[in-house]
Length: 369
Image (cartoon, rainbow, N blue to C red; front, side):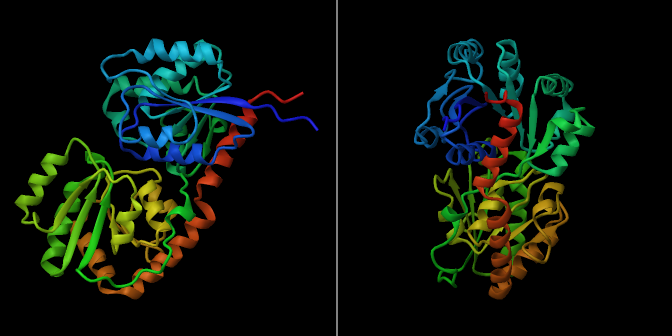
């Protein structure tokens, strides 16, 4: 019996800073079939909060430039591609798509994959970004879209051929997030959590406005925001202006988000747009009920009133009402948690995601003799 050929895979991502794409890539490599594939990871610049997590995976990890605006990553990536002769280059986030894909094509890498995490509106606001996306997508052997809406966006708006895009939902390590014991009422009031990058997309300004409304209705409710980003100082000032300084804790980067999910009663997501957010999938695996905006990617994985509450995007009053409903009913929280856990365990595991991606690789690699 012959040993299957092993293929070299280079994952390229913009940075190891906080973000869902970084978490998805960690999950993908953790569940990789190491008998068939030899993964390596390169970030274009810096090290970031996830550097140690990637280094702990037992795969080669590269940082190609100390800073974003010191573009050493161009020639260092070209040198890495030429030296290692990868079979597959898998790109994550815009910079990697725009830089690594053309270099991989130029240097003869047979399979060039990019992973699209959401139908990002910024591509419509910048002609250069839109042109770069369209041009470099033509160099993709295949595109992994994290939701059906993202796939439709790529086909209908970006012009990617239908047969070169597959939906591959993000996945989580369900066993890692599943709590060892059922949730119970805890002393010290109720906690509403927000988890994510502190950027306009996530709209934590709305989160704070919802928190202010809830505080007027629920005397013992508290809030935690776990994440970092350029809006942190402005959000802290907003919290103070709303009279929330004693109720909202800005936790910064939390290395193990399970500590947040286990402490909270509700996850509140207030994003303006999303693909398939890992924060929601992690909360589902942790048995934490979710209140989220009724966005296309979220509607694909959640059912309002069955495993979550979905609210019209930006509707502050509805967000307040739905979170208050959950805080008032342990039975409703338990019902949502059970349904959400069953769904994520059945359909959104990291092992399933990795197997789907590796099947795409194999479809485009030459048949073994």
